[in-house]
Length: 420
Image (cartoon, rainbow, N blue to C red; front, side):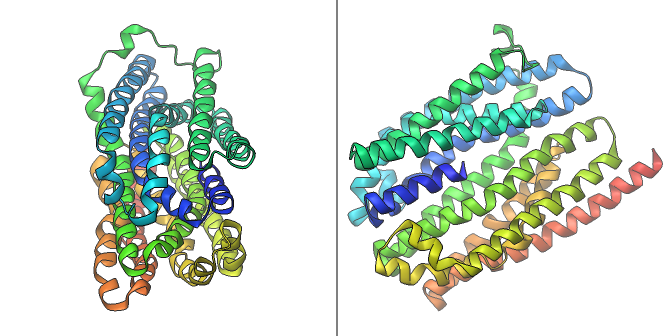
């Protein structure tokens, strides 16, 4: 998924222009939030499915999966309709002003058509992992990345379709992913063979799914709000060029965090399954292993970013202003990345074991409770520097808070294991 977004940005930056990078950055929060509905429903339902399978309750797992499909379609289609109706209001609100507006509008309309398909892919991908089939889930994510790479080259470079080509490449790549996910659940690879009776909404399951999935949705909603604030603040401080700088940094931040989030997503069903089976020793081991891998990946990415920021930016664009301003800003944004795995794994743990309230609060600490207030206050004193230093300060504060709660919970698990 991170490669998919990254490829779009590189191709449009080199073949259309730096304004096109800013245009995609404006559209991303809207489509990202609607697609996040699918991710939230997938993660919330998958927590139930993992624990149901661990407790040997296949009927609850099947009913949960059917409800996931129904609610994903209802919500995402409704959001797409609203998104298309209010297109002229939403794009400027997310920073699509000046020269950015028209290319952003072109990209927005086409990408929005494919968002329900993307939501179903994200939902289905989480369910595949909940079944313990990570290789199939990985293939499901590789398909749109490769498809987007090929289609971007064909539609933008060969057919010269510009922003329309970039948008159709993204949409078509997720349609390919959807057909693969559909094949998986219809084949013998999946245990979840649902029928029409499972699609009827079950309110107790929906309540539990919503409580757990709301953690993910809230996180993605805060991400969308962050893009809205950043695009508007940076447009006021430096115009289209500053929005482009943030767009490139945002892509690299996604590219950096998605591998860490991948470890987090792999951790969720393992922790949930073993917690449901009351195997607390394995839950504790999975926490340690997830932290090791998440922080290890983050450290490697940190080293690359700090060593080669100029080379990385030059891949996206040759715009002199962007090449000049992006590297120093990128170093500030990534300064605390090595420790971010602790915050992500810590909040995900509470989500995995079904404790929605602490999961929600810990998820919101980073961008909701710390970053947004900082980015509203610090630029008034430090200008653009205030925007960039808000990132490492928020990362550090949220990690300290999450680390404390995770440490306390690990002690409780040790006590439970000893008692057992």
